[in-house]
Length: 278
Image (cartoon, rainbow, N blue to C red):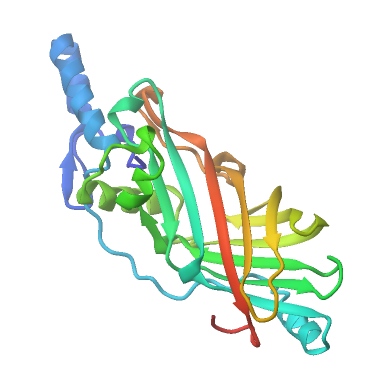
């Protein structure tokens, strides 16, 4: 869905290993309107389907959260003032939903993105919530796109089946659209925690694309017994424009994605004795 804007090329554009000629449809429209409209629709479907292949992007380590509070949390744990937890990526689920828009939206796909790798820490005080906090971070090139089982679980609006080349094109164009080389990671840290277990209100600072925005997010957090895992479940909305990102749009807005991205979070974290590793 996230692709190179057609208007940037006057003759032929290259995306991955695939050539496409967006201006050809415009020329044909002047000469033969009916044929031009058919050609434009076919081109639009290919563009929105993200059919261009991509070169795999190196994974690398998850970028650390800036000015981490983990050393202070670890010291508090050693004083018996609370418990530090490390996010267990294998037992956690983060799903980001990207929605099609525009009058020709039906020729494209909604997308669901997820993570196999995420780094993070959670601190729960022994008594009350004073000093509680969370830090999470992940790399954009670690995003997994459109697993069939994820799409199937979301119903009719996600029932289409993007091909492998669609998914590869989506990855390449997503990273380009959000300037993934310059801004490779998203970091989240709590600024305040309110409420009472198990229902909490977190004020989260989200850093993405060189900008930071503060969001209020409801979370349900179960305090584990003994050495059991902590679990936190919630959701939030990210607006690309809030982070200086222009939502994808071509053909005068006929093909686009919505500004809003919804994020479902189900985090599992296990007791930790260090701020390094899982």
